[in-house]
Length: 400
Length: 123
Ligand SMILES: Cc1ncc(COP(=O)(O)O)c(C=O)c1O
Image (cartoon, rainbow over all chains, first blue to last red; front, side, top):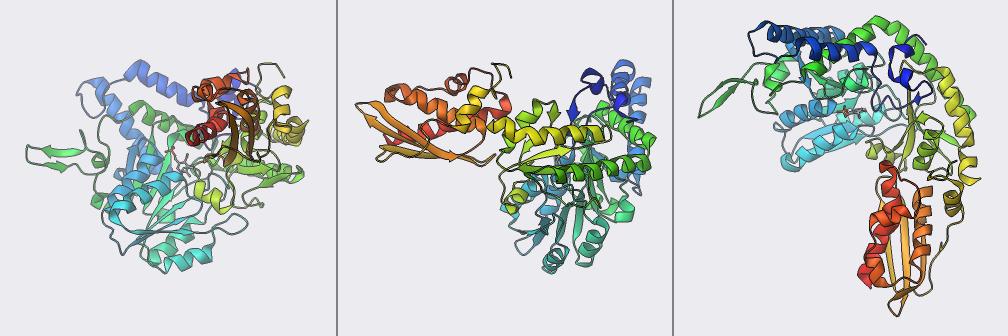
C-alpha cells in the first residue's frame, strides 16, 4: 500500500495489524516532522509577541485556519474555531445553545450518537429542563428516516447527528437530514469525528449549522479539533470557556468579548497541534480523496466478504458497502468481546472491545459490548485476512 | 503460550470448568455484583460455620478472566476465616492468576471481590 511506509509506527512494528483507527489514527512522518520542526525552529507564543518568531508562529497558526476553511469549504475563515477536540467542540455548542431552551423545547438526537453528543445534552437538560428524543435505527443499522421525520414533527429546536457511526460504520445522508431538520425549524450540529478522515466534507453543500471533528482521528495530533459554525450563529452563541484572548476589553466592572473566532479560543492555544493538523490536511490532500475513497471502498468490500465467511460472527452495521465507513463492530458467539480482543492482541491484531462510548446504541441492540475493527488508509486486504483467520481460531483457543 | 500469559491453558481450564459453580442450598450470605462496562454478572453465596467459610458457590456470566477469577478466588475462600476475607485486597485477587493482568482487564478480575464485599456486609 502506498501510504503504510509513511507511518513510522509500522517501521517500528512491521507486523502490527492496527485496527483501532476510529479511536485514534496513526500519524504520518510529515505530521510528526511538522510538530518537531515547530518546536525546534519557531516555538513562540501565538497572537502576542511582536518579535519575528512570534509573528511567524501567529501566521503559521492562522494559516491552518485558512487550510481548514478550504478543507471543509467554509465560507469565512472566522467560522473555523480551534478547540481541543470533538468533545469540547460539542460542549461549546450545547452549552451555548441550551441557554436558549426552556421546558417546552425538545432536542432530537439519534440512537447511534457517541456519548460526546448525548451526555452534554443530558447534563444541560437537567438545568434547562428541555426534552430529548432519540431517533431509532432500522434493523440493518441505518437511521430510520421515517421515524426521524415523525420526531421532527414534534418541532425540536436542535438536531444533533453523527455523520458516520463510530460503531456501525453507517454513513448518514447528512444533506437530506439537514434539509429536513431545517424545514422543521431546527438548528443542526453534525458530528463529523468519524467522517473527516474517510470522505470529503463540504459544509456549504451540507448546509449544516455546526460541524465538529478531532485532529487525532484524521492522521493529526491529539489535543486539537475544530468547531465549524455558520458566522451568524457563532456570533450569537455565548462563549463557553473564559479567559485571556477571548476578550475585547476587561474592567473591574465587566468584560466585553472579542469577535469570533477569538471569542471561542480562550487561553494559550495548542499551537504545535494546530500546525500538526495543518500537516495532516496536507497529507490527506496529497493522497487525494479519489485515492483514499478507492482504497477504503476496496477494504470495506473485502472486509464484508471476510466477515460473511467466518462462522459465529455477527456484524452489527450495514451488510452492504454503500455509504459505509471502514468500521466494523461484531460479536462472536460464545466469545466474550473482552476475551476476543485480548486473544486477537496475542495474534498482533489491535481491535477494541467494549461499548465504544455508545451505550444507547448497544442497549438498542441488546448488547453489553462488542469488538470493533476500524480501518484507515494504511490498512491492507492482507491484514483483513489475518483478522479472518484469527477469528476462525478464537473459539478453539478459548474452549480447546 | 508462556506461563506468565493470563490466557494460558491452566486459566482457560478454570473458565471452561469453573470450580464452585452453582448455588448453595442454605447460604448465610448472598450477593450480586455486575460490571456495567461489559454486562458481566456474578452471584456469590457463602455458608459460614464457626466464623469460617464452610461452603461457597457462584453463578453468573462473564468473560474468561472474570469467571476464572471467581473460580480461583472461591477455591481460596473455602475454609478461610471471615476476618481474613474482610482483609482481601484487589491485588491479592490479581496475584491468584500468577500472571500480570493488564490495566484494561482489572475490572474483570476484580468482579468477584465486589460480590464478596457485599456478601460480607450481610454476615
Ligand atoms: C462519533 C464520535 N463523536 C465524538 C467522539 C469524541 O472525540 P474526541 O474524543 O476526540 O473528543 C468520537 C471519538 O471517540 C466519535 O467517534
